[in-house]
Structures are given as structure tokens and as C-alpha cells.
Length: 111
Image 1 (cartoon, rainbow, N blue to C red):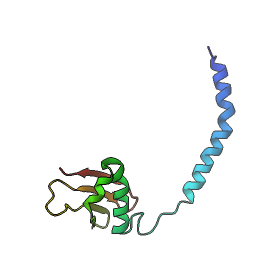
Image 2: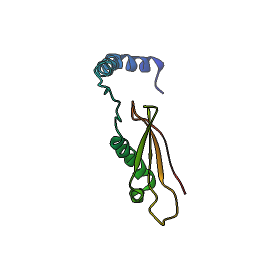
Image 3: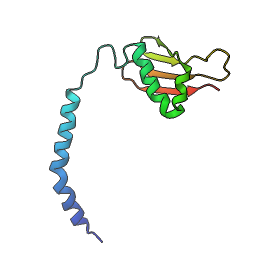
Image 4: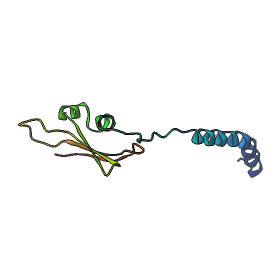
């Protein structure tokens, strides 16, 4: 069984290493670039982000729901939807993506 003193010594030896890692993270955070128009500035980018999220979830078949359309709501939220091919039954992919940071609010696919 490892003694408490040994664990303390072991953790104490790593403290400078942890302090250095923390400093590196802080320096990187201070130097981060945030685009003025947000990370998802236009509909084309919103569609590419949606495709990147949909394919692992729904498979390559989701690409059959093109053209994809993107609409910006309140200058902050992209709504991206697919199109149901003429004569086909079923649903289309849907995604909500934050313009500012590219966060995926949610995705779904109709039936």
C-alpha cells in the first residue's frame, strides 16, 4: 500500500510541471483570435458545419437531401435544413448553429 507521504511527495514533484502547463494555457487564451463576424460568418460556412455534424450521425445518405439552405435568425443563430427530393417521402436534416462560436445547438432529422 502506498503511504500518504509518498503520494504527497509524488504530487509535489509535479507542481512545477502543472504550473508551467497552466501558464501555457493562459498564454494561448490571451492570444486567441475571434473573428469579428463570428466563426460561422455566412450561410456557406453554416452548411459546411452542418454537413460535418450530420454525416457521422446520419451517414452519407444525408447528402441526398441537397440543396441545403441556411437562414440567419436575429444575427446570431444559423438554421440549416435539407430539401426533400421531389416525389420522395420522409424528412430532412436540420441543424441550429451559433454564428459567434460555431456551437451546435442541436440537430435532428425528420421522418
